[in-house]
Amino acid sequence: MALLALGINHKTASVEVRERVAFAPELLAEAMLAARETAGLQEIAILSTCNRTEVYCSSELQGSRALLEWLGGYHGLDPDELQQSSYAFWDEDAAKHMMRVASGLDSLVLGEPQILGQLKSAYSLSQDNGLVGAELGRLFQQTFSVAKQVRTDTAIGENPVSVAYAAVSLAQHIFSDMSRSKALLIGAGETIELVARHLGNAGVKDITVANRTLSRALSLAEEFSGKAILLGDIPEALADADIVIASTASQLPILGKGAVETALKKRKHRPIFMVDIAVPRDIEAQVAELDDVYLYTVDDLKEVIEENQRSRENAARQAESIIENGAHEFMRQLRTLDAVDLLTVFRGKAEALRDQELEKAFKQLNAGKPAEEVLNMLAKSLTNKMLHHPTIQMRKASAEGRTDMLDLVQELHQLGDYSKNDGK
Image 1 (cartoon, rainbow, N blue to C red):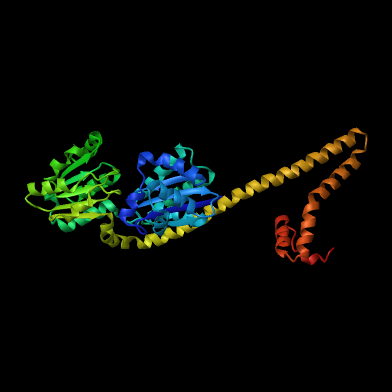
Image 2 (image 1 turned 30 degrees about the vertical axis):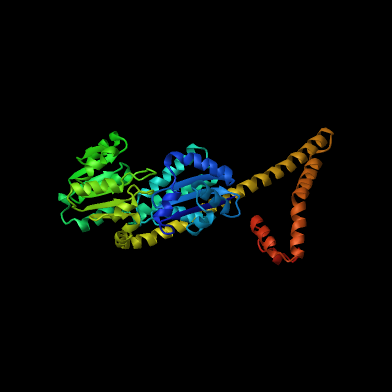
């Protein structure tokens, strides 16, 4: 079996491509079951976020093409085009990649903590649907352990740096006095919660949360002394908003060009700062064409983020060393599992020989043969049968000059330096 990590991310694909490959959360389990069947996989888990879609699997595949064709077919994309934006890692490299992702080293924001929770959710979903077995399960557990060590032993998580933080930082460059700005947040998930927290720290006092479910919006808004509305109320609330930040799981845009145009007229063309963190996008791309609107996507946040990354580079180097060791240890564990299977067969064969010879010995004892004679015959016969095939193979290896096999036998049986025995 081989481990494969196949995906696209913010480094290899634009937001237009990433949003086309993103999976709707409610369809993810069904998609994984289809992938396992279609691509011939044994185990599978899928991580789908705004910045990446990755498939982790265990299979007998000789290459990644079958999985790539399934991914392209599922999303209506040409697999050849998709391949240009994708990457594939195998075995130890796959383990290392997953650990880098979990530790935030492969994120748009270096060291951001959200990805670990998203990876744990992906694992839980696969586990709930019976799609994770021994190999992938061990990889996830080792990955979570390494990510925890990275957080504990390095400064990678110090200072709040995330896409949410970058969005608010960008707003601070545009509005000199954040306390006078009104914010409209679209969505009520973890990212928006972080945005609200950072806005509060930046001095914003007027926050409105719009969500499909009012109860969730209320829960989040109350935490920041804000207001809660439904998505349908956004056009009316938009006229009062100086800052709009959106992050939902909607497959279609929530905020269109027409609604923004109407709001701008009511605002008498006072500018609106917008950040669309969602993939697929929550705000129509055409909104950027309007005067007095400053619309940014996750890709536009890169410059802000690069500034914050520099402070984490030393910690990242330490984390890479931890990940390297973690990946080596994981592969060592896998190889140990291979040895366990071989040892089970080896021990079973030895025990079968023992039982055969014991049966013969009991028959001889019952027939009246002296016990000493029977024991000697038992020991001699058992020794000959145990050593017969290995002896033939060692002689053959010696004749062929395969000293590596002879050295291995010496190591396995602790024979010392057999070359000094001169045949005695």
